[in-house]
Amino acid sequence: MQKHLSVFSEKSDYKGCGIMKQKGFSFFLKRIFDYLFGITLLVCAFPFFLLAALVVKIASPEAPVLFKQERIGYQCKPFVIKKLRTMTNDSDEKGRLLSDEKRLKKWGIFIRKTNLDEIPQIWNILKGEMSLIGPRPLLYKEMKIMSEEEQKKRQSVLPGITGWEAVNERKARSRRIMAEYDLFYVNNWSIKIDFKIFIKTVAIIVLNQRPADNIRAPKIDEELNSEFSKKVNW
Image 1 (cartoon, one colour):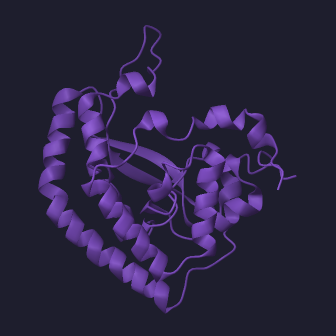
Image 2 (cartoon, rainbow, N blue to C red):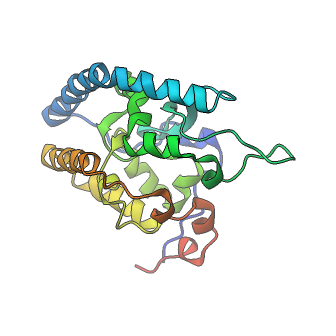
Image 3 (cartoon, rainbow, N blue to C red):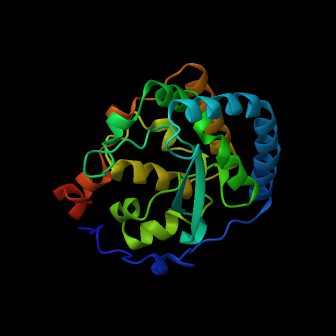
């Protein structure tokens, strides 16, 4: 039996907890690809990104165009990602934000489907905080679905915009299964698996196969409170 909730409780506990280092010629090639593809994608997508940013500003002027959030990165160190905002900041009479479903409008759904909201993360790649391919950067509470050792292992590689879990998200109906896809990637990483993920990602984008939010994994709070997340028989 393995417990998943007795993990890091404070942000400071995450600092420097990585147990593996990325090195070697394969990793060097991976980073070269990150920079070359990142710059190329940024140049090609920039006009479309500007148009999408204009749509966000006109449709939802009450908040900044870019959404900023702290996530857990390489060796469990926090960093800030930026994405094109896809939801409004609509709130109820008490000033509390409405549910994601109510704040996600048609323009936001379109931006997500075209993945234009991910373009600002290229800056994280160029800064060395992310890779194009790797486990997606998580919030602190999303890490708690894993044991402490699993968290260390998962964060021993650079987080990515897309990854093995991302291209298999239709099969990942729980946060625990999502974590297992990420751990599989870390344990089996190679240039070959990165190439496979890249091709699958392109196919998903071109064929418009990204699943809707309502059929993806449940809210993290729901799963953390479930019996499944408290104990798992192996």
